[in-house]
Length: 474
Image (tube, rainbow, N blue to C red; front, side, top):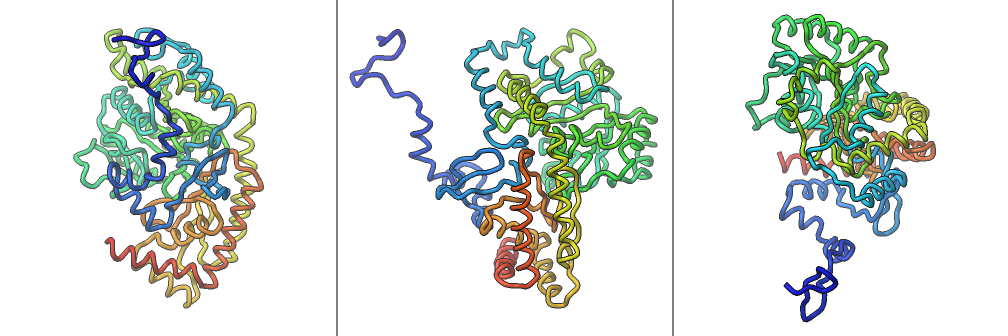
């Protein structure tokens, strides 16, 4: 083939234009909902339109994004925790530019590049009782790795998990998912048993069977934002080790400073999980990365000989871009003292919200740690509000929380989420870079929404719309 300038195919019209992402988005970006409806999950755009969440955001930075009209929106969701350091942190951006510009010989498969070792070294320094790391591309992969490693290390098949837990949606992780609706239609799964979070007697009963490889637990459950009771993790660890089983801490959402310590299990002295799962915020919001940290003993059972060197691996698990993002995240967290910032700002948010509980009969509890906070609503006492509450509950549990989430977005431009299906709980997991002004903005907006809920008005009109939708789509 004839070429121009040493490689471009020659044509009568000159060199073919290269790929132009800006032009593609300018030309086709307006089709986003139609494209999803035709080619992806058609229920997602349907749900977003029903809730009025079908907004178009143009750009983002830190804890904020802006729509096409230039309106600022406060992010109290952080992409389900992925955007730990906010969107487009300049240090992480620069690290990714640098790693691309270096043109590294990435993923050769037959070398030991430095970046995975450096990231493992930095991560393990925060968990000194653990010695080794395995890198993958997501939280559910990190959990899958932990499940495999625990079963190999103990020679046992069964993994315990806590009721209402969430550990991912691939088959192994789904086996330890405490929410029935996620599991329906996907069996048979791995052998598992759910035990109530905090119930040591239930754990003890299951361990007596002698077939338990591990207990996997979120130190603070994402669904409903329930923290493990004080002393539970350490007592569970002692029970597990007495029965030669392992403790797996799923820190995919709670790790990397989210709860005001680097790991959430570190809130309790003496807790040293055998395996720790990380992901989400480790990505810097750019390149998917997950990690499973473990002891020498566990890794030695998995990688027990040279011919088992590749017995567990991940195609993209230690790629240079992901490792650079992870290293940059840890550097930023140290330089900006992110964990201390989370403790300070998180306490301001939690305490200001908790002070509202006596003021509103629909508001029952505010709980959580650091910047992982649950706001729970419940049945009011007054007859006027009780009848409206009953109307919503009869249609579908969780509609009142959605009634609060919707005006926070539509009127106050604040993005939040209901904590789980059929739950009257809003979960706040903002980027860890939110400041006092962001906290005050949220609390002021939430107060206005609750004032209207207490007094009646347009908020309940939206509730009736949700009731109609819930009845139609049952």
